[in-house]
Each structure stands twice: as structure tokens, then as C-alpha cells.
Image (cartoon, rainbow, N blue to C red):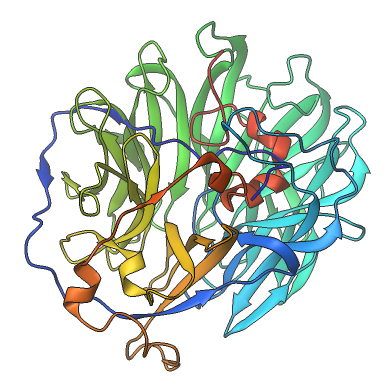
Length: 515
């Protein structure tokens, strides 16, 4: 979607070789794949709906609650002052002239979850396994320190929105993760002046945990002024990022920053063993296993390695011989997904790591590159595949040893939508993501529901792919022309944090580029 809180779709940035086993998953005989019922999520009168963004998935709960953002027809009172064209995207994105709200799709019903009182935007950033929705909303005020519209962290439960507030004296906050117990994590400004203002609030910014109506400042590592949390598991453990001091590194333009693991009052530093100065957090599972990526010595962006951290031990997952890689998700059985490059860093492939072995999941058809976004406890992986220059993209599903399939092959050919990225998959095998409508190119969130015994409602399955042969067929990938990417749905999340893209200056979140 068009950005007012601007965030670019994260580029395929992946990382370097280690002496660990690597294998290419056999691209042999296909397995029987489910047929799917296609749900195209509408809007609230405006042009677009969508999910996506750089916060950790999922936007889809294990109970089938699906959340994202959708346009209304209400004019945005802040247009055009706070949503100009994004200079980071050639040809776009265009300004968003409409207010957009968080949507919830559940049991066939699309609900406008609204925003905080006033004419305000809102968007979901994370959905818990049992359907709690965390996100952010405008509050109608202008931040006196920045001159930008303020946003507050919010939580939706049973359709009701709660303003989670800020730390004392802080003007803004932002929620990034929520667990099944309603514990929410994210970041909040406080009242302490920050002359360097690394996160752009004008004050220090702290990682926070909201629970039972109270907010806890989790502190920082060392003498660092700023921190934020990205993930909280059902044990109340928190994973996040913190500066360790205020000394600016000349290469990155920011201080040294490490990931942290917080466990009921104790914050553990996850430092970079490769000599870099940035360790980025992505996701934490219920067993305390955490994944992300860490810089190489010299901090040459985007070079770095994916990692798995558990009980104080950091494992470098390496690449396929290149210098770029990241780990984005670890499921409850310890499988890790991410992406990594081959020598020369021109070819990026999705990987699955388990028990010390990293497997190349390949790409769809003749595509050269792919990037994984999410996996479930059954080892099913979703993401996008396309040309290595980013000019084409299509949503994929990988399962049962492969090969990777184009999800456009499992929906009716006359559906009127092209699925370009799958962002989430739950333990029931339901898949959420983003697509383009034809012929006008508007964005829509989509949901694919398996036509299987685990889903009672099979209405709408009749017209879908009918055989194993059907799901192995792949057509040409959609060309991602700049005019088509202007209203990217992953920028709906961006719309909630337009200016936050530059406030999260670490390499796993937002649009950070070294100075």
C-alpha cells in the first residue's frame, strides 16, 4: 500500500559461508498437494488491502484469524504533509490519500477493527496463535518533538481496541509482538532527552512489555540509550535489540547494537562473534530458541550471517558460499528458515536448517532466486520466488521435500488475482499473503484454506486445481513494474510507521542503510 509511514519491502539481503553441511533438496517427483479455497480480502471502500511488512510474522493465527490493513474512503487529513513519495522506491510508492484501518478476517467475516478515536490510521503488526492482534494507531496528536503525527501501541481483543500507552513522559509507542497470554512487546519513547536521537523520537526509546494493564521498561544493554523488543513467547521471554553504548561507529553511523534475550528481569547480551557491530533479532519460539542475523567484520552492508541462539549458545548458520544471509523464523520443533546467497551474492535461495544441515529449497520453475517468510510446525514453508534482480515475483509453498510450487497454480485461473508473496502459514496449513488484482492492479490480501478433512467448509474448492499435474504447472512470474509496486500492501504496515522506518536503524527492520 502507498506509504505514509514509509517502509520499503525488505530487499533480499542474505549472508556468508560456514563449515556446516549444505544440501540441495531433490527436485524429483512431486507429492500430492492440497487444493485450496481462495479468499480475497476486500477493503472498507477504498482501493487496497494487504498484509506484509518487516515485523516478524505471522499475521495469521492457528485458529484462522487473519489481520492486515485496508483502505477506507475517508480522506486522510494529514495528506500530503506527512506522506510524500518514498525516495527509496523507484517510481513510488505514491502518497496514500485515504485513512486505512486494521482488518480482521475470521470465519468468513471481514471486520473493520477501527482505530483510536478520531480520524486515524491503524494497522496490525502481529497476530498471536489464539487470535490476539497487536499493532499501532494514530492518536490524532502531533508529536511536539518531531512535528509528525503521533502513534500509540494498541491491542485488539474480541474486536475491541485498547491503547497500551507510553512510558511516563513519552509521546509515542509501537507494538511489534503479542503472545497467547496477551503480553505485548515493542518500543516506547520516554521523557529522557536524547541529543543524538538514534530512533528519531527526540528522547530515549526503550524496549517494553505490556501485561495486565501495566507497562514494563525492560532497560538496555550496557549504557545504551535505546532498545526495542520484537518477539515474546508464551513463557514471557522477550527477544529484542539494544544499543550497548552511545559511541557512533563511522561505518554504520550508529552505535554498536546487540540482540538481547530477556527472561523475567534478566537481560542477556547476544553479541556478534564475527567482529561486526550489529546483531539483529527476528523471532523467538516457545522453547527460547531465537534467530536473526549478524554483521561480518567491517559492517559492509548487506553482508552478514544468519544465526540460531539457544541457552547462551550462538550457532552461525552460514550461507551457500556467499556473503549475505538471514534467519527469519524458527518453529516449535527447532527448524529454521531464512535466505542465503551463493558465491558472488547474485543468487539468493530460501533455506531450511535442522539438526546441523542447511538445505537449499530451490525456486519456482526457472526462477533464479527465492526468499522464505514463514513456516509452521509441519515444516511447510512459504515466501516468494522470482528473478534475482527483483523484477518478477510469485508466492510459493514448499513442503514434503519439494519441489517448490507456485501458489498461483492452486487457484482458479479466472480468479482475477495474482499471488506475488506468501507471508504467513499456520499449523492448519492456511496461507496468507498479498496479491495484485487484474486488470487494474489494485492490492488485496489473500487467504488460502486447504480443501481437506481439517476444514469443514469446502465451499469454493470445486473450481480449484484438480490434480497433482495442475499444481506442478507454472506460468510466467508477474513482472514487478514500479507502477504496480506503488501501492504495495506491505506498505500498509508502513503506513502505520512511516517515519519509523528510519527509527529502527538495525539491519533486520525497516529501511536502515549505513551512512
